[in-house]
Length: 86
Image (cartoon, rainbow, N blue to C red; front, side, top):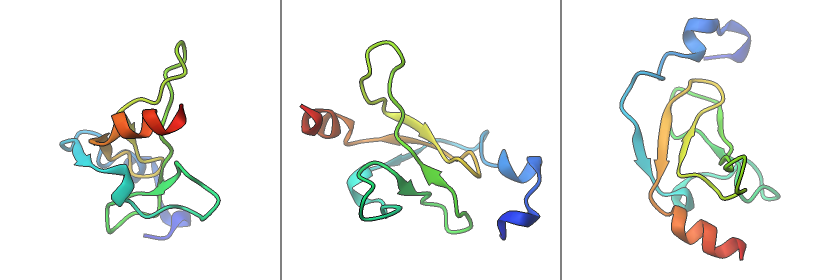
């Protein structure tokens, strides 16, 4: 769906859907220069998964959501991602 035709209902359409369990390492990267930004795994979406950090500890968090369709995901390989930062 083209971005210019999206409304609020479209942007939140997947928030109440079940959380998808994904491996960050299997997701398509947004660009070669972006280690953590990934393309949303939904076929009908052009949004991004950004990998959030805990605001107090700075640690990467396993729960994320698409910036466009709000599809929620849980990274199965979050422990590996955290180790790679050290």
